[in-house]
Length: 445
Image (cartoon, rainbow, N blue to C red; front, side):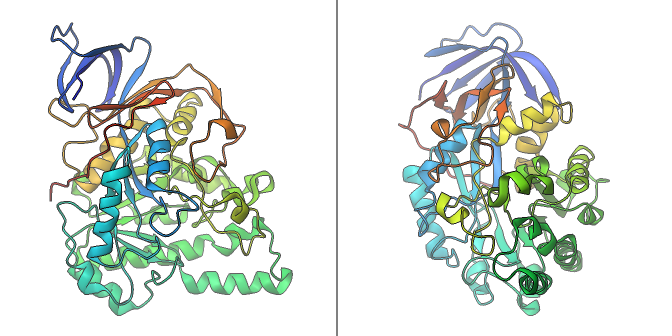
């Protein structure tokens, strides 16, 4: 592989910002030094005035392949991710067919090995009747098990208590959960249908998928995890109420129960439904400003451990349907890091905290082998950002296959200039080099 010398970078890593030179050789970080590195390199990048981050690791994406490729593909969405500074992703099992067997799981890995520009892993899915397949999952090369404890696609709602008890008691892997109580949501939908019929306003979304639905399901998951000492990771926390379930008195590596916040819950509030409509319709729902602010504070206080996207694209036609027919989810991987950097410009998050929550903590949470940090001997997943290069999100610069973004028209003050994936310069100032594909993530378990 080509070697690279990155000179004069302000390296954001492990709680500090330091002016350093970094040598990338044979796909790994070979040397890090504050003084001149005289080793020859095939290419030198002068990063003066820019910040070097470890590549972001997104622990929750829906890239829609196989079966839903009219919405997205592993190739298109991984390309958007790389342009946005995300060098590794973990993808969810509610594709078509649902990823409920080891054979279907490995088929997705094969697709990614041939097409993904980013490093990759895939969750094994759980249904009410595939526990034997789930327990075959290899902890060394699979990120975890995903349980939908709220409504989802196909056969993936797990609502039988005996199945949940069996998985939580027997699984040796991290269990990631989508937590929303199905009965609560169904009852709320019926109440709104009595008033509006099928034409329910989208502003009702956070009232239908309310804090009670989230807390009831999340608290049950936590109860199961504590009972069985299960390694539990609750995805996309959307309410202030749920924060009481999480602990910040232990270091992350000692936690058995962890939590994730998503970009949309850190950025939007229920006031934005008036202008954005279904384009910010996610499950769980974007809720009140008080919830958003509480989630931001929980990240700062380490009650919430990682930041992800829940990137879940649908076509423009699908999202423009009435509320009851429009699917939930939207594309975010291209804009996640620059959105967080915008919150840095607003004085909410430090650069060190952004790196901690989007890189270090994800690697620690999932026990990813030699990624998530800028350390000698680690895979060279690296991102150069310019904090003073503004740009505006427009349809013309979107890389998502779905062709839309909830951030259209948003001016960001920061830009990603270079992205290295496992030592390969995959993205440089708007241009892609697709000759080398990403690698399968491995886990130290």
